[in-house]
Amino acid sequence: MKTTALITGASSGIGMALAKVFASKGHDLIIVARNSQALELLRAELTAQYAINVKVFQKDLSEFNAAQALYTDIKQSGLTVDYLINNAGFGDFGMFAETNWDKTQQMLALNIVALTQLTYLVLKDMSAKQQGRIMNVASTAAFQACPKMAVYAATKAYVMSFTEAINNEYKTFGVTATALCPGPTESGFMDAASMQNSAAFKGKKLPSSMDVASYAYKAMMKGKSVAIHGVINAILANAGRFIPRDWVTAITRKVLDSSTK
Image (cartoon, rainbow, N blue to C red):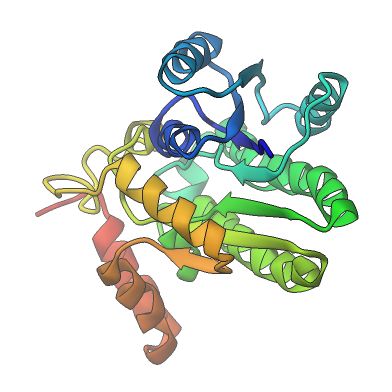
């Protein structure tokens, strides 16, 4: 029986790579992003290459109640979501009080509110039929406070905690939830977060979005609660358990600082 994956933020980066991975496995797709032109190009590419159906929805999920509007559109189209991938999100870089508040508010709305509301709506359907898988894209930033990315890291800590909790609540209903935690990746994130000169990215050979997406698909299908991409990332993410929190924060500040002197 055909299954359908709903992927938000599918117009670029990890979201686009996830769409390609799910398509290669024969899943129908519902792809969502603000950039309708990029979505249509992706739809044309995937339907030409694979025997699947792809439905496009142009939405800015940072807008008030946009997740509800998307869910309503999906239901009215007669579609069923078997896999939910909450990938849409972005970060920002800088001293907190010097960042743009409108951008910060948009980040909170997208990274937390839209993700939570869409999960709430789709999870009801999944639990009713006792089948489904959810992937919420968090980050290795979820494991510690991140100076100069204070709000972003906090949103991803929320995503990880929230995902672990609902995985525990609903796995007995046949539904699993996976928090994907990639580290720095070749994607549009760096530009959106104004981190081109950050020591975390500059001069580094980063994993590709496709590497992360392939790993994420396997982890989701295995029902992993938290999936950290990369051995080094996993070691560093868990090292904070054995080091004083102030030390971890100080080390993270040094790594993320835009100065590479």
